[in-house]
Image (tube, rainbow, N blue to C red; front, side):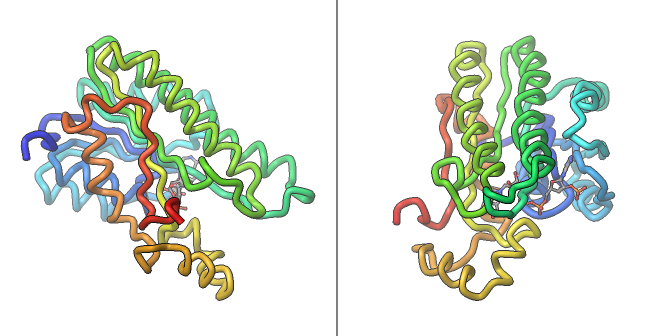
Length: 251
Ligand code: NAP
């Protein structure tokens, strides 16, 4: 299991307060990493406690990632607290559901700012540190809508297609420098982000009917794949977008 061991590694996870990000932060700590937890508004005392119970360290950084001026401080605080950054998981994301014809300009820009712009600039800032140290792992959280058009979420779809593209672009530049950049595309996962879909019985049924695994995903389903992409187990993986979707994309 040493291939997957993250002892002595430092990870930064955005959107670590709940949903997928919370499970990812805990999964990385369970594999041995210390973790910087980035949240927008939440104070994730439960996660700090759970990480301490595992014998790992954590810090909490509260920041609105759609404000680009805050991003250098986030990487700076992580390096100051832990001495380095080995793993970056860009997970924070929002979705705005309105038909394209009515999609407000503010919704478009809010989604692109957080889901795409903050992802690229955090990759750039962490990537500079990783290139200096000659190693690093970046995992961007993509989506089924990195491949498909979706319904009523044009800004989200644009942002997630772009996340897949940025992942491949950075992977090409940084593979030779010891930095692996990959993405995980979760399927339909039970979190606040999908509450509206699950509350609509017709939509919920049509989604479930297409999932070969026969159930919605749970945040914990992301733990194994993210540990793999954060560890030596994935040292020859570059620019891959890994679907964790119960088989959705095969249908
Ligand atoms: P979620 O439960 O809604 O959690 C969103 C997270 O993002 C929270 O931790 C939140 O922090 C943080 N966040 C929101 N706005 C932010 C901002 N301006 N600055 C910094 N952090 C901010 O979402 P989720 O379902 O776990 O989704 C996580 C990621 O997976 C997203 O990128 C999403 O697009 C992607 N994804 C989700 C699904 C799914 O089915 N759920 C499927 C595919 C992809 P606070 O708690 O502080 O607000």
